[in-house]
Length: 396
Image (cartoon, rainbow, N blue to C red; front, side):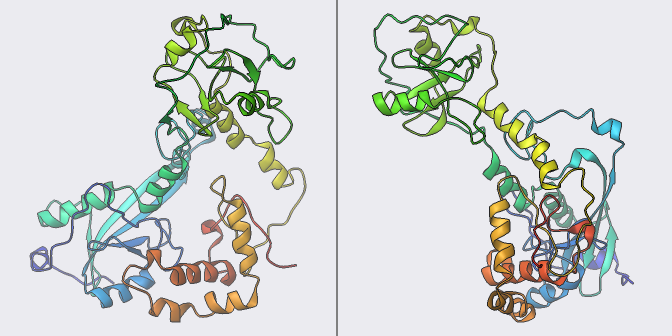
């Protein structure tokens, strides 16, 4: 039961910090376990350090810091009706957490109710929010914490924004041969094979060649890449993606998709009027999005059509795959089958937690112990599995 406290007494407490742009606010999960905003008691965010804790781990933090003010944040999610979900727009950008990109949290699939409370420790006095009578400094800190992107979301967006490009070093002074080549506006074909799609125009001499062969045998025959190795001509534009707004440009020398500010001039050298072009082929970003949203791989992993009994309990906790983290997930699962590793990081959790530095978010021992205990104990509720997409068995 929360102890009573008057608003007047709040004025005698130390003022909290007010987060400004770019500061990390750890409001995704507890520093020492995987309790999160959807847990029964949500998370307690220290209004001085911006570290988040579950109900069990917040008191030790208070005792070590004597910071009395915490913002308790809790979320209740209710799945939206199927017809509402079907109306959602598909991703148009290979990025996470930005407009047009993938939604890490699947927020569009749920109606979300947020419950925020100011909590004062050690008595656990509670002040439901919003409350206009709170001191101005406390209100400013609360508003800043609620508005800030969580630390993990900042990292996800930075790591996954596949649309970030740089200007090619070859763009400014690209050498173009006066060889009389004029390229038609349609009807293209690879100069070395019969492929008529996934074609790239070399911006040095106007040669049209097919793109790379994908892992499944589709795509091209690698002729554009082979041509670069033979000639050293660095830039190519993907035919079919040219529009008045730009196109896909690849730098073989820099091994990356790049921006070419002089693209209109470079393609006009071969008789192509950029303003008259229409998109007829998928961009590389669209192709990658297709790969990341295809259903058949997921169906294959789940053995669609088969009757399987899900496993759950100690040693059977899964890990969430962010799209390209399945290899790391499998390595971690294997590591925690090694007895010495289990003894070091899963069987000595309390000792490692007690030796934690003030900010344990980046401490290897603490975070590895947190992880090991979670996947081996079986204490993670089914609805809070560390992983929902990929479950790797650790036994049998």
